[in-house]
Amino acid sequence: MLAALPCLQVNHPHATAAASYKPIGLAAAVRAGFTVPPTLITSDPDAARTFAKDHGPVIHKLLRVTRHLDPDEMPLTVWTTAVEPDDIDDDVAGTAALFQTRVDSVADMRVTVVGGRRFAVRIDSGLLDWRTDYDRHTYRPIDVPPEVADSITAYMADLRLVYACFDFALTAADDWVFYEANPSGQYGWIEAATGLPITPTFADLLQNGTA
Image 1: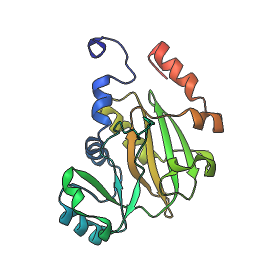
Image 2: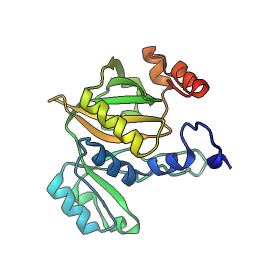
Image 3: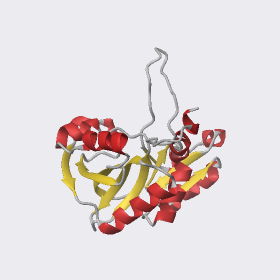
């Protein structure tokens, strides 16, 4: 019923479902012109080990967010994890796994897009996955390079998104490397730390159909 409503939806549930799946997001990122790290999705342990040797160092990611609870019914997640070729065993054959070349980055970039308006923040943490320890973060609002902004616009149009949170690695050469775009990403902690007017922009979008 929700998907059938002829009104602004942030985002349409079908668009959210598609964009939440990493293979779809990675393909759209390539079409949009982003720089994307070498990536392998496979259930073949030998292929995974070969990729890790040829494109290392590599990391492992989930293909999509899944509901995972510990024995006490507390929610868990799987962080981005560094992987060596010898770490890859035959358990990979159980399901598809995503391996990706680790980016030699100096910082992370988070860009929250609301109705075409971009709020970009540099995150310095020194962590492989900055989500593992928010106490180590420092934040600085930044401008998005024009070529990255153009790719963001193309990505949003391709996947019919009105709202998304983009994650990039920043290299020492000031290149932005695409990690992912979350169509249901959180932004409250960034707004609190930086004062960026994300919530008012979100409200304007919902009320007026424009940001």
